[in-house]
Image (cartoon, rainbow, N blue to C red; front, side):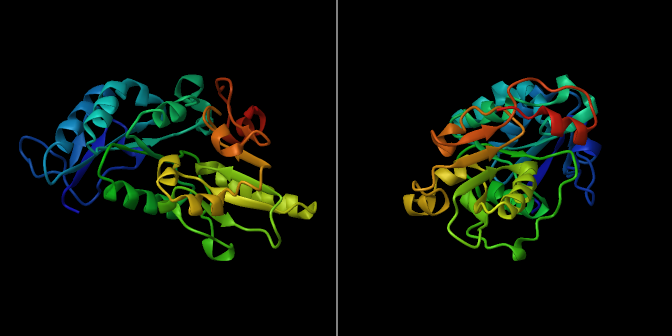
Length: 282
């Protein structure tokens, strides 16, 4: 895809978005595909908007999710204009660990989801990330935010589960129990592997739980009502959503009889495994 060009706000080694087989854009090499925006997220967003307004170019720009706050004006303008820069936001949660409170995003996911015409995708593993890029490249009427983790996550072996749908549907059944589910577990991103583990423990205790991966609310809302009912049927009101972020907005999917485990306070500095075990709140 020669039209795909972009870079990062001085974080290419951390965001892993450098196009390794191509040179950098410069006055000496205007054909270069890697842009070095410097530590200026706001300006990066503005440049991406200009590139997105140029026919034949699909631009992307990367930084940590917490720094999306610096980009709010160009993000909002992209949404108003319905142009499609791809914002790649890594280091997406309190799982960031030792970098501490200032770098750990809590409210940013909810903020991005609240912007009209914005598509937010938070994939669970490498396979979902591939489909997330496909969805981003096919999207036409607004900006896309790809929200990715810093910490290692397991590759989910899709073939071993009873699956319905995939990331392109926004939400899909990743794992179905052997009998009618009594409970629906919902998660995005790095928390999907946690609810898969929870499903196994619940089965040991005689509780049948469905696991739903929900990488994109916006893609899910584009599905027809029959598909939505297949994934989140009205008859199953016991639901639990898990996301290492603000719980704002989740009640639409968890219902009055459901709940959400997320973050209602700021993070702290600690190794990710220790911190994640002790930080979730309801």
